[in-house]
Length: 84
Image (cartoon, rainbow, N blue to C red):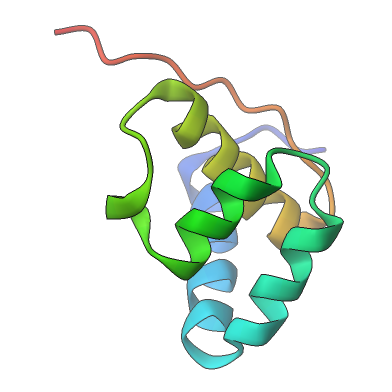
């Protein structure tokens, strides 16, 4: 895989958001194939981000799902708490 950049992740998000807006059934069906936390992914897709827990695990799961949806693989991106 090429080096990760915001441009790459932006492409993944655009694929995900476009399909979520235009082919929501396709996105929901992909949850069944997702090897991560399906429950959190389902909540994020069906109810939106406001319904998710506000924690690192939920953020990581959604990033993993978006990368899985766009590429077919979980990319194991690091998600950290914001230093305040």
